Amino acid sequence: MNFYFLLEDEKSFLKVLPRWLDYMNFGYTRVADIQEVRKNNYILQSGQGVTQLVTKVLFDTIDTILLNPGKIDKLVIILDAEELEVEERKQKVKEQISNNYHSKDINFEIVILVCNRCFETWLLGCKRLYPDGEVDKKSYFYKYYDYYNIEQQDPEAMRVPEGSNETIAQYHFHYLHELLRYKKIRYSKNRPDNVATEAYFRGIVERIDTTEHLKTFRSFYDFIINKEQQ
Image 1 (cartoon, rainbow, N blue to C red):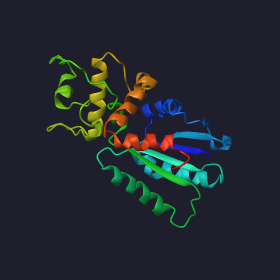
Image 2: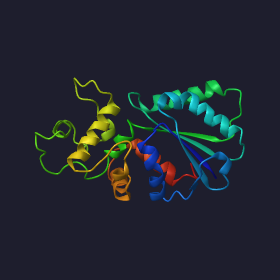
Image 3: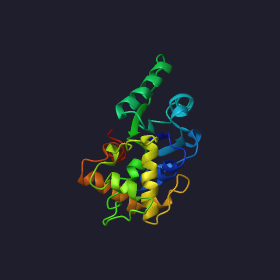
Image 4: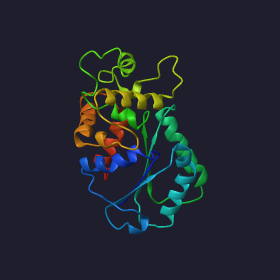
């Protein structure tokens, strides 16, 4: 079996996902191009943002797989819900595929996984990330700390504070960035190494194993763990 992962993310998740796959004992070898695919391989590609992913890059990817029959068994599309609801985001992708390929026989499975709201939302789910003690009110992080407790409440349910002009995804990114900075952990989309560790990943898995939080991460995790049964 061979997989083709198409990610909306251009930076952080694209770098982190191969390490997460190792932690989950995915067992497939990454190759750079579909011509290199033999047995038990996977390809990882960026969709260059949601607009490109659900149009040009998505169509180019499907066309490439169709032109190389027998190479890919599952195309796995992973993208952010952002301001949309999860099912609405999935439906939009399904509609694009249906409208563009209604007369063609797609002989491989297409799996759509949506992160609610963005990759940083999943990262906020790591257990024991939220500070135990009171945060200094002069801290840059205090307004986030005071607004929403991401240890006790589901990060996927966190909305933007009233009066903010940020999108939900932007707010979640800034919450994570300031939380990690408060804990003296460096994080940026270009340098996500500190959240790509196995300990950090296990902290997110512990969250879904002990709560009903992060349902979309659970869907992603279950798909990878049960990849051949899905």
